[in-house]
Image 1 (cartoon, helix red, strand yellow):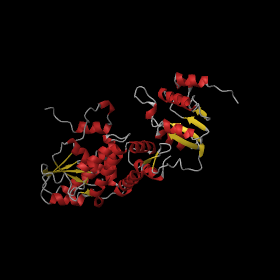
Image 2 (image 1 turned 135 degrees about the vertical axis):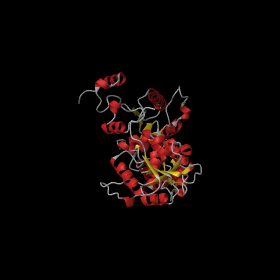
Image 3 (image 1 turned 30 degrees about the vertical axis):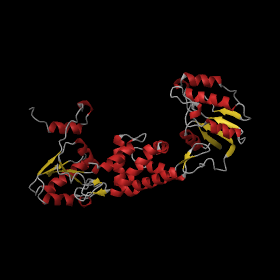
Image 4 (image 1 turned 60 degrees about the horizontal axis):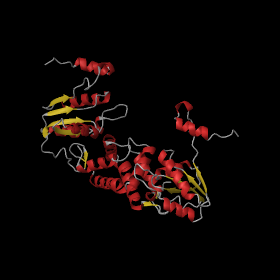
Amino acid sequence: MASVEIDQLTNALARLPGLGPRSARRAVLHLLKKREGTLVPLLRALETVDAKLATCSICGNVDTSDPCGVCTDVKRDARSLCVVEEVSDLWALDRSRLFPGRFHVLGGRLSALDGVRPEDLGIDTLIGRVAGGEVDEVVLAMNATLEGQTTAHYLSERLESFPVRITQLAHGLPVGGELDYLDEGTLAQALRARRPVA
Amino acid sequence: MASVEIDQLTNALARLPGLGPRSARRAVLHLLKKREGTLVPLLRALETVDAKLATCSICGNVDTSDPCGVCTDVKRDARSLCVVEEVSDLWALDRSRLFPGRFHVLGGRLSALDGVRPEDLGIDTLIGRVAGGEVDEVVLAMNATLEGQTTAHYLSERLESFPVRITQLAHGLPVGGELDYLDEGTLAQALRARRPVA
Protein backbone atom coordinates (compact mmCIF):
# COMPACT_ATOMS: atom_id res chain seq x y z
CA MET A 1 0.00 0.00 0.00
CA ALA A 2 1.83 3.05 -1.26
CA SER A 3 1.16 6.60 -0.16
CA VAL A 4 0.71 9.48 -2.60
CA GLU A 5 4.35 10.49 -2.15
CA ILE A 6 5.64 6.98 -2.90
CA ASP A 7 3.35 6.77 -5.93
CA GLN A 8 4.77 10.04 -7.20
CA LEU A 9 8.29 8.66 -6.86
CA THR A 10 7.26 5.50 -8.71
CA ASN A 11 5.74 7.55 -11.52
CA ALA A 12 8.81 9.78 -11.79
CA LEU A 13 11.05 6.71 -12.11
CA ALA A 14 8.68 4.98 -14.54
CA ARG A 15 9.16 7.85 -16.98
CA LEU A 16 12.84 6.99 -17.43
CA PRO A 17 13.74 4.96 -20.52
CA GLY A 18 14.23 1.30 -19.67
CA LEU A 19 11.91 1.39 -16.65
CA GLY A 20 8.18 0.63 -16.70
CA PRO A 21 5.60 0.75 -13.90
CA ARG A 22 6.60 -2.68 -12.61
CA SER A 23 10.36 -2.19 -12.58
CA ALA A 24 9.92 1.33 -11.18
CA ARG A 25 7.99 -0.21 -8.26
CA ARG A 26 10.83 -2.68 -7.67
CA ALA A 27 13.34 0.17 -7.80
CA VAL A 28 11.29 2.20 -5.30
CA LEU A 29 11.09 -0.73 -2.88
CA HIS A 30 14.85 -1.10 -3.20
CA LEU A 31 15.30 2.63 -2.50
CA LEU A 32 13.00 2.50 0.54
CA LYS A 33 14.63 -0.59 2.03
CA LYS A 34 18.22 0.52 1.47
CA ARG A 35 17.77 4.18 2.23
CA GLU A 36 21.30 5.13 3.25
CA GLY A 37 23.00 3.13 0.53
CA THR A 38 20.76 4.01 -2.42
CA LEU A 39 18.12 6.67 -1.81
CA VAL A 40 20.37 9.24 -0.18
CA PRO A 41 23.23 8.97 -2.75
CA LEU A 42 20.72 9.22 -5.62
CA LEU A 43 19.08 12.24 -4.03
CA ARG A 44 22.42 14.00 -3.47
CA ALA A 45 23.60 13.22 -7.01
CA LEU A 46 20.37 14.58 -8.50
CA GLU A 47 20.57 17.72 -6.38
CA THR A 48 24.14 18.40 -7.48
CA VAL A 49 23.43 17.81 -11.15
CA ASP A 50 20.22 19.85 -11.03
CA ALA A 51 22.09 22.77 -9.44
CA LYS A 52 25.02 22.70 -11.88
CA LEU A 53 23.46 21.45 -15.12
CA ALA A 54 24.43 23.56 -18.12
CA THR A 55 24.51 23.34 -21.90
CA CYS A 56 27.98 24.16 -23.21
CA SER A 57 27.78 27.44 -25.13
CA ILE A 58 30.63 26.33 -27.39
CA CYS A 59 29.77 22.77 -28.43
CA GLY A 60 26.23 22.06 -27.17
CA ASN A 61 27.25 19.24 -24.80
CA VAL A 62 25.37 18.97 -21.50
CA ASP A 63 27.63 19.04 -18.49
CA THR A 64 27.93 20.49 -15.01
CA SER A 65 30.03 23.41 -16.25
CA ASP A 66 29.96 25.86 -19.18
CA PRO A 67 32.21 25.57 -21.19
CA CYS A 68 32.03 21.82 -20.74
CA GLY A 69 34.80 19.46 -19.68
CA VAL A 70 35.60 18.50 -23.27
CA CYS A 71 35.96 22.07 -24.51
CA THR A 72 38.18 23.07 -21.58
CA ASP A 73 40.40 19.97 -21.79
CA VAL A 74 43.79 21.36 -22.90
CA LYS A 75 45.04 17.89 -23.81
CA ARG A 76 42.55 17.78 -26.68
CA ASP A 77 43.48 18.92 -30.16
CA ALA A 78 41.38 22.02 -30.77
CA ARG A 79 42.14 21.96 -34.51
CA SER A 80 40.12 18.80 -35.04
CA LEU A 81 36.33 18.99 -34.70
CA CYS A 82 33.91 16.05 -34.68
CA VAL A 83 30.28 16.95 -35.49
CA VAL A 84 27.61 14.68 -34.00
CA GLU A 85 23.81 14.67 -33.94
CA GLU A 86 23.13 14.23 -30.25
CA VAL A 87 24.83 14.51 -26.87
CA SER A 88 24.55 10.73 -26.55
CA ASP A 89 26.69 10.37 -29.70
CA LEU A 90 29.32 12.66 -28.18
CA TRP A 91 29.36 10.54 -25.03
CA ALA A 92 29.59 7.31 -27.04
CA LEU A 93 32.56 8.57 -29.08
CA ASP A 94 34.19 10.05 -26.01
CA ARG A 95 33.86 6.79 -24.07
CA SER A 96 35.79 5.01 -26.80
CA ARG A 97 38.64 7.54 -26.30
CA LEU A 98 39.47 7.22 -30.00
CA PHE A 99 38.95 10.84 -31.01
CA PRO A 100 41.49 13.25 -29.50
CA GLY A 101 39.83 16.46 -30.76
CA ARG A 102 36.78 18.46 -29.76
CA PHE A 103 33.12 18.05 -30.57
CA HIS A 104 30.13 19.93 -31.87
CA VAL A 105 26.57 18.79 -31.09
CA LEU A 106 23.92 19.67 -33.68
CA GLY A 107 21.01 18.72 -31.43
CA GLY A 108 19.29 16.59 -34.07
CA ARG A 109 19.29 15.87 -37.80
CA LEU A 110 17.63 17.42 -40.81
CA SER A 111 14.26 15.80 -41.34
CA ALA A 112 11.54 16.75 -43.77
CA LEU A 113 9.20 14.34 -42.00
CA ASP A 114 9.69 15.87 -38.54
CA GLY A 115 10.00 19.41 -39.92
CA VAL A 116 13.59 19.90 -38.71
CA ARG A 117 15.27 22.61 -40.82
CA PRO A 118 18.91 23.78 -40.81
CA GLU A 119 18.05 26.75 -38.59
CA ASP A 120 16.69 24.37 -35.93
CA LEU A 121 20.12 22.76 -35.49
CA GLY A 122 23.38 24.14 -34.13
CA ILE A 123 24.72 24.73 -37.65
CA ASP A 124 25.33 28.48 -37.43
CA THR A 125 27.51 28.02 -34.36
CA LEU A 126 29.41 25.27 -36.21
CA ILE A 127 30.01 27.56 -39.20
CA GLY A 128 31.11 30.23 -36.73
CA ARG A 129 33.65 27.90 -35.15
CA VAL A 130 35.03 26.84 -38.55
CA ALA A 131 35.02 30.43 -39.89
CA GLY A 132 37.04 31.47 -36.85
CA GLY A 133 39.96 29.70 -38.48
CA GLU A 134 40.83 27.54 -35.48
CA VAL A 135 39.90 24.27 -37.14
CA ASP A 136 41.87 22.14 -39.63
CA GLU A 137 39.56 19.14 -39.94
CA VAL A 138 35.85 18.60 -39.52
CA VAL A 139 34.78 14.97 -39.03
CA LEU A 140 31.11 14.47 -39.89
CA ALA A 141 30.03 11.70 -37.51
CA MET A 142 26.34 11.52 -38.33
CA ASN A 143 24.40 8.29 -37.91
CA ALA A 144 24.39 5.97 -40.94
CA THR A 145 20.67 6.67 -41.49
CA LEU A 146 19.02 8.46 -44.39
CA GLU A 147 18.46 11.59 -42.31
CA GLY A 148 21.94 11.46 -40.80
CA GLN A 149 23.53 11.19 -44.22
CA THR A 150 21.33 13.98 -45.61
CA THR A 151 22.56 16.16 -42.76
CA ALA A 152 26.19 15.23 -43.44
CA HIS A 153 25.74 16.06 -47.13
CA TYR A 154 24.17 19.42 -46.28
CA LEU A 155 26.99 20.25 -43.85
CA SER A 156 29.71 19.30 -46.33
CA GLU A 157 28.19 21.73 -48.84
CA ARG A 158 27.95 24.50 -46.27
CA LEU A 159 31.57 23.93 -45.20
CA GLU A 160 33.25 23.44 -48.59
CA SER A 161 34.13 27.13 -49.00
CA PHE A 162 36.31 27.03 -45.89
CA PRO A 163 39.95 25.89 -45.98
CA VAL A 164 39.32 22.77 -43.85
CA ARG A 165 39.54 19.05 -44.50
CA ILE A 166 36.04 17.54 -44.33
CA THR A 167 35.84 13.81 -43.60
CA GLN A 168 33.16 11.39 -42.55
CA LEU A 169 33.12 8.10 -40.66
CA ALA A 170 33.80 5.03 -42.81
CA HIS A 171 30.85 2.76 -43.62
CA GLY A 172 31.25 -0.98 -44.00
CA LEU A 173 31.24 -4.23 -42.07
CA PRO A 174 30.96 -3.77 -38.29
CA VAL A 175 33.53 -5.71 -36.25
CA GLY A 176 32.28 -9.27 -35.86
CA GLY A 177 29.71 -8.76 -38.62
CA GLU A 178 28.93 -11.85 -40.69
CA LEU A 179 28.09 -11.31 -44.35
CA ASP A 180 25.16 -13.68 -44.14
CA TYR A 181 23.45 -11.55 -41.49
CA LEU A 182 24.21 -8.06 -42.81
CA ASP A 183 21.74 -6.01 -44.78
CA GLU A 184 22.26 -5.26 -48.47
CA GLY A 185 22.89 -1.57 -47.80
CA THR A 186 25.87 -2.33 -45.57
CA LEU A 187 27.22 -4.90 -48.03
CA ALA A 188 26.88 -2.41 -50.89
CA GLN A 189 28.76 0.25 -48.89
CA ALA A 190 31.50 -2.19 -47.91
CA LEU A 191 31.97 -3.35 -51.50
CA ARG A 192 31.96 0.15 -52.95
CA ALA A 193 34.53 1.36 -50.39
CA ARG A 194 36.76 -1.72 -50.74
CA ARG A 195 40.44 -1.06 -50.21
CA PRO A 196 43.62 -2.69 -51.53
CA VAL A 197 45.09 -5.24 -49.14
CA ALA A 198 48.14 -3.60 -47.61
CA MET B 1 32.09 13.23 -21.81
CA ALA B 2 30.54 13.17 -18.38
CA SER B 3 31.69 15.20 -15.40
CA VAL B 4 32.27 13.70 -11.97
CA GLU B 5 28.81 14.82 -10.85
CA ILE B 6 27.08 13.21 -13.83
CA ASP B 7 29.10 10.02 -13.30
CA GLN B 8 27.93 9.94 -9.69
CA LEU B 9 24.33 10.23 -10.82
CA THR B 10 24.86 7.42 -13.35
CA ASN B 11 26.38 5.21 -10.66
CA ALA B 12 23.55 5.94 -8.22
CA LEU B 13 20.98 4.97 -10.85
CA ALA B 14 22.95 1.89 -11.95
CA ARG B 15 22.59 0.48 -8.43
CA LEU B 16 18.81 0.20 -8.84
CA PRO B 17 17.45 -3.24 -9.73
CA GLY B 18 16.63 -3.46 -13.42
CA LEU B 19 19.19 -0.84 -14.45
CA GLY B 20 22.80 -1.50 -15.42
CA PRO B 21 25.60 0.91 -16.38
CA ARG B 22 24.33 1.22 -19.95
CA SER B 23 20.66 1.80 -19.21
CA ALA B 24 21.58 4.13 -16.33
CA ARG B 25 23.56 6.23 -18.82
CA ARG B 26 20.54 6.36 -21.13
CA ALA B 27 18.34 7.37 -18.20
CA VAL B 28 20.78 10.12 -17.17
CA LEU B 29 20.86 11.53 -20.72
CA HIS B 30 17.07 11.53 -20.67
CA LEU B 31 17.08 13.35 -17.32
CA LEU B 32 19.57 15.94 -18.55
CA LYS B 33 17.76 16.61 -21.80
CA LYS B 34 14.26 16.79 -20.30
CA ARG B 35 15.18 18.55 -17.11
CA GLU B 36 11.85 20.20 -16.23
CA GLY B 37 9.74 17.19 -17.16
CA THR B 38 11.83 14.41 -15.61
CA LEU B 39 14.79 15.49 -13.48
CA VAL B 40 12.95 18.04 -11.37
CA PRO B 41 9.89 15.82 -10.60
CA LEU B 42 12.18 12.91 -9.69
CA LEU B 43 14.26 15.14 -7.45
CA ARG B 44 11.17 16.56 -5.68
CA ALA B 45 9.64 13.08 -5.24
CA LEU B 46 12.87 11.73 -3.75
CA GLU B 47 13.17 14.70 -1.40
CA THR B 48 9.62 14.24 -0.14
CA VAL B 49 9.98 10.50 0.37
CA ASP B 50 13.39 10.89 2.01
CA ALA B 51 11.98 13.46 4.43
CA LYS B 52 8.89 11.44 5.35
CA LEU B 53 10.02 7.84 5.04
CA ALA B 54 9.08 5.71 8.02
CA THR B 55 8.69 2.08 8.98
CA CYS B 56 5.24 1.45 10.45
CA SER B 57 5.65 0.60 14.12
CA ILE B 58 2.51 -1.56 14.01
CA CYS B 59 2.88 -3.70 10.89
CA GLY B 60 6.41 -3.10 9.54
CA ASN B 61 5.28 -1.60 6.22
CA VAL B 62 7.38 1.25 4.80
CA ASP B 63 5.38 4.38 4.12
CA THR B 64 5.52 8.14 4.44
CA SER B 65 3.69 8.06 7.76
CA ASP B 66 3.80 6.00 10.96
CA PRO B 67 1.40 4.27 11.51
CA CYS B 68 1.18 3.55 7.79
CA GLY B 69 -1.75 4.17 5.46
CA VAL B 70 -2.95 0.56 5.72
CA CYS B 71 -3.00 0.49 9.51
CA THR B 72 -4.84 3.82 9.75
CA ASP B 73 -7.41 2.96 7.04
CA VAL B 74 -10.70 2.70 8.98
CA LYS B 75 -12.41 0.92 6.07
CA ARG B 76 -10.18 -2.10 6.65
CA ASP B 77 -11.25 -4.97 8.88
CA ALA B 78 -8.87 -4.81 11.84
CA ARG B 79 -9.94 -8.31 13.00
CA SER B 80 -8.34 -9.97 10.00
CA LEU B 81 -4.53 -10.04 9.77
CA CYS B 82 -2.46 -11.16 6.80
CA VAL B 83 1.15 -12.08 7.60
CA VAL B 84 3.67 -11.64 4.77
CA GLU B 85 7.44 -12.02 4.44
CA GLU B 86 8.37 -8.73 2.82
CA VAL B 87 7.00 -5.24 2.19
CA SER B 88 6.88 -6.12 -1.53
CA ASP B 89 4.46 -8.97 -0.70
CA LEU B 90 2.22 -6.55 1.20
CA TRP B 91 2.22 -4.19 -1.78
CA ALA B 92 1.47 -7.04 -4.21
CA LEU B 93 -1.51 -8.26 -2.14
CA ASP B 94 -2.70 -4.74 -1.55
CA ARG B 95 -2.58 -3.91 -5.26
CA SER B 96 -4.92 -6.82 -5.95
CA ARG B 97 -7.43 -5.27 -3.49
CA LEU B 98 -8.60 -8.77 -2.57
CA PHE B 99 -7.75 -8.71 1.12
CA PRO B 100 -9.84 -6.24 3.14
CA GLY B 101 -7.97 -6.66 6.44
CA ARG B 102 -4.64 -5.46 7.78
CA PHE B 103 -1.12 -6.76 7.34
CA HIS B 104 1.95 -7.77 9.28
CA VAL B 105 5.40 -7.77 7.67
CA LEU B 106 7.91 -10.24 9.10
CA GLY B 107 10.86 -8.75 7.28
CA GLY B 108 12.11 -12.08 5.96
CA ARG B 109 11.72 -15.83 6.40
CA LEU B 110 13.28 -18.41 8.70
CA SER B 111 16.38 -19.77 7.05
CA ALA B 112 18.99 -22.09 8.51
CA LEU B 113 21.17 -21.41 5.48
CA ASP B 114 21.14 -17.63 5.90
CA GLY B 115 21.13 -17.82 9.70
CA VAL B 116 17.73 -16.14 10.07
CA ARG B 117 16.20 -17.11 13.43
CA PRO B 118 12.71 -16.34 14.81
CA GLU B 119 14.08 -13.43 16.88
CA ASP B 120 15.39 -11.80 13.67
CA LEU B 121 11.86 -11.47 12.29
CA GLY B 122 8.88 -9.39 13.44
CA ILE B 123 7.33 -12.38 15.20
CA ASP B 124 7.17 -10.99 18.75
CA THR B 125 5.22 -7.96 17.51
CA LEU B 126 2.88 -10.34 15.64
CA ILE B 127 2.30 -12.40 18.80
CA GLY B 128 1.71 -9.14 20.65
CA ARG B 129 -0.95 -8.06 18.16
CA VAL B 130 -2.71 -11.44 18.33
CA ALA B 131 -2.41 -11.63 22.13
CA GLY B 132 -4.05 -8.20 22.35
CA GLY B 133 -7.28 -9.96 21.40
CA GLU B 134 -8.11 -7.66 18.50
CA VAL B 135 -7.67 -10.33 15.84
CA ASP B 136 -10.07 -13.11 14.75
CA GLU B 137 -8.16 -14.57 11.82
CA VAL B 138 -4.50 -14.77 10.88
CA VAL B 139 -3.81 -15.51 7.21
CA LEU B 140 -0.31 -16.89 6.69
CA ALA B 141 0.65 -15.59 3.23
CA MET B 142 4.23 -16.84 3.00
CA ASN B 143 5.82 -17.65 -0.32
CA ALA B 144 5.31 -21.22 -1.56
CA THR B 145 9.00 -21.94 -1.03
CA LEU B 146 10.60 -24.33 1.43
CA GLU B 147 11.68 -21.49 3.72
CA GLY B 148 8.35 -19.70 3.40
CA GLN B 149 6.46 -22.84 4.34
CA THR B 150 8.83 -23.54 7.23
CA THR B 151 8.11 -20.05 8.50
CA ALA B 152 4.34 -20.56 8.12
CA HIS B 153 4.57 -23.86 10.03
CA TYR B 154 6.56 -22.23 12.83
CA LEU B 155 4.08 -19.35 13.06
CA SER B 156 1.07 -21.67 13.17
CA GLU B 157 2.64 -23.48 16.14
CA ARG B 158 3.40 -20.23 17.93
CA LEU B 159 -0.16 -19.01 17.36
CA GLU B 160 -2.14 -22.18 18.09
CA SER B 161 -2.64 -21.33 21.78
CA PHE B 162 -4.55 -18.17 20.88
CA PRO B 163 -8.30 -18.20 20.13
CA VAL B 164 -7.82 -17.21 16.46
CA ARG B 165 -8.50 -18.92 13.18
CA ILE B 166 -5.21 -19.62 11.39
CA THR B 167 -5.38 -20.07 7.63
CA GLN B 168 -2.90 -20.09 4.79
CA LEU B 169 -3.07 -19.31 1.08
CA ALA B 170 -4.27 -22.19 -1.10
CA HIS B 171 -1.68 -24.00 -3.20
CA GLY B 172 -2.51 -25.47 -6.58
CA LEU B 173 -2.71 -24.62 -10.25
CA PRO B 174 -2.09 -20.97 -11.04
CA VAL B 175 -4.67 -19.33 -13.31
CA GLY B 176 -3.80 -20.19 -16.90
CA GLY B 177 -1.47 -22.96 -15.74
CA GLU B 178 -1.22 -25.95 -18.06
CA LEU B 179 -0.64 -29.33 -16.42
CA ASP B 180 1.98 -30.22 -18.99
CA TYR B 181 4.16 -27.27 -17.98
CA LEU B 182 3.71 -27.33 -14.21
CA ASP B 183 6.23 -28.88 -11.85
CA GLU B 184 5.48 -32.04 -9.92
CA GLY B 185 5.35 -30.21 -6.61
CA THR B 186 2.50 -27.99 -7.78
CA LEU B 187 0.65 -30.95 -9.30
CA ALA B 188 1.04 -32.92 -6.07
CA GLN B 189 -0.33 -29.98 -4.03
CA ALA B 190 -3.23 -29.49 -6.42
CA LEU B 191 -4.13 -33.17 -6.33
CA ARG B 192 -3.82 -33.45 -2.56
CA ALA B 193 -6.01 -30.39 -2.03
CA ARG B 194 -8.62 -31.42 -4.61
CA ARG B 195 -12.14 -30.31 -3.84
CA PRO B 196 -15.58 -31.69 -4.67
CA VAL B 197 -17.13 -30.03 -7.73
CA ALA B 198 -19.84 -27.73 -6.38
